[in-house]
Length: 418
Image 1 (spheres, helix red, strand yellow):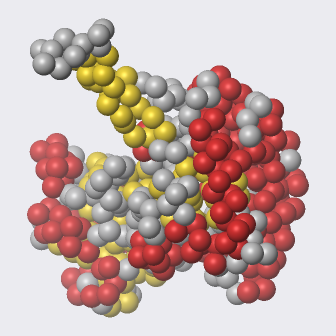
Image 2 (cartoon, helix red, strand yellow):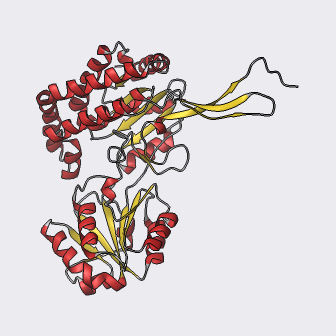
Image 3 (cartoon, helix red, strand yellow):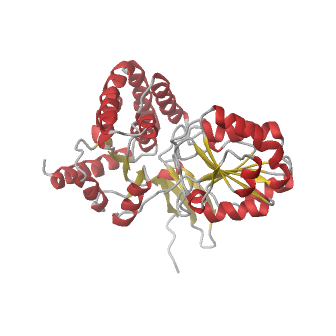
C-alpha cells in the first residue's frame, strides 16, 4: 500500500463528507446514531469474536493486564457503547445555535452561531470503544472523522466501523463521514498529522509517548492530555465513612484509566484515624501502597515513596500516599505534581470545599465524589472524544460543544457603514 496516497484519499473524502454533514438535519443524524446502537447490540457476539482475535494477539505480544483491560469488549462494554450512542442522539444538537444576538448603534444585529470544526482526526491506542464514541460525537456535531486506532485493536476497530457504516447507510449519509484507517503502518500517523489541507483538529488518546509525538509533529491544532495524575485529598473535617468509600472507589474501580486516583493526600489531623481502615481495604484488593515517612509511621508495611512517585501515573494497583499539614499544602502538592486532569476533596467544611474548587488548577475538581466520575458519559455528554487538560478551546471531557466552534453572524436590512 502507498500510505501517502491512501491517506490523501481518506482526507479528500472526509473533507467532502464534512461539507454534507455540516448541513445535515438533526433528525437524519439521530437516525444514523440510533441505527448504530441497534447494530452494535445485534452483533455483540460477532464483535466479541473479532475482539478475541486482538486479545489473543495481545497476550502473545506480552501486553500487560492494564492494556488488555482497555482492549477488551465485553457484553457490558458493548451495552455501554450502545447506550452512549443513544444518549448522544437525545442530546440537543448544538449546530446552528445562535447566541449573544444584540443590536449595535448602527442598527445591525451581531451574534454568534455554533458550527462544526470540520474534519476531526483521532489517533488512539488500545481502546476500541473510542471508535464508536468518537464516531457518535463527531456525527452529531456535524464533523467528519478519520480514526486511526492502534494495531493491537485492528480487528475490533474494523468490526465496529462496519456497524457504524451500516448506521450511516440507513440514514442516507456517506460512509466517508466516519473512516477508520485500515492500515497498521505507523507511517499513516505521520501522514495524518501533516494533512492540514483536509483535517481541522487532531485528538490523540493513548499513552504519554503517543501524545508527546502527536504534539511535537502535528501541523494541525491538537486537543490533548498527557497524564492522568489524579488526587483525592481527605481533609481534617472529612466524614470518615465518605472518605473511605470515595478513596477506595477512586483507586480500585478500574486501574488502567486516566481518571483513577494515583496519589492520596491526607490531613495530618485525621491520618491516624482514616489510614488504617483504608489500608485494610486496599490490601484486600491487592493494591501496593507507597507512603511518605509520616505515612509509614502509621502504616509500616508501606513501601517508601520516592519523589518520582508523586508525578507518576501508575495505571496499575499502586497508590502513593502523603500526609500533609493542611488543605493549603495539599493544593500546593496537587498544583505542583498533578497533571491538571481531575482532583477531589473529601470534607464537610463548605468554606474549604469552595476554596479547593477555586484554587486547584485542574480540568475537573470535585467535592465528596470519586475522580472516576470525570467522564463524558457521567457528565451527561453521552460519550467523550477525550479529556483535555489544555486551557484553550476545550477543557475536561470533550463532548459535542467541544467539537464545535463559533462564527460571528451579522443581520442587517440594507445597512451600510458610514
